[in-house]
Amino acid sequence: MLEKEQISYAVDGMIAKEDLPPGPGLRVLKGFSIYAGMDEDEIEAYLEFRHWYLRQDFWLLDLVPVKPFEIYCFEEPDDAISFPFGSIGRGEFSPYQKYQYKIRKVMERIQDLAQTFSCISHETGRKNIQKRYENLLYKEFQSRILSIVKQYDKYRQYMDFKAVKNRIAKQNMLQFEAKEVWNKHAYEE
Image (cartoon, rainbow, N blue to C red; front, side):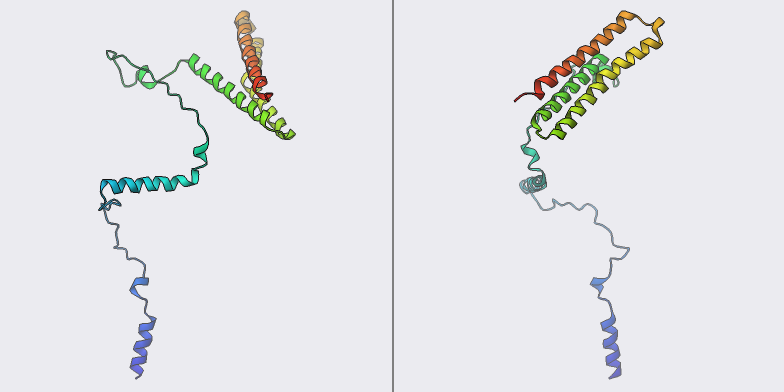
């Protein structure tokens, strides 16, 4: 009888094989496909469902209107000789085009700030937006004017006064255009 109790006690103390962690020889099956056994229609339905399910967290973002993205594309004539690192293939812009693009983006940013300014009714919020606009003006235009003047003061004998005057006038003109954009959009009803 004692032997039965010992055996019963030993069996109760044993760990079930299902409760053991997997052994070191266990490997992932290679070549397993989640689409195994599905035809093309089922795969398409599965992928469409996954797409729909994952987009549920972002459905509000789909309601926001978005401007179409502008793609700059250089077309190359058929008889052109192209090289892998040629200037046509890389889509490079001239420094003038890069500068114009930068100015356009600054003006768009000023317009966004102005529209935000016109929508906010809280006084501290309006002051914060006004301050951001003034900082942007200083960073993009006024600081450049100051650096031109400082450079001219330092190297006066090497610089052409008319060229410096034209550079300052151009920066003043851009600053004036920025202020016009602000006034147009910040105070509209």
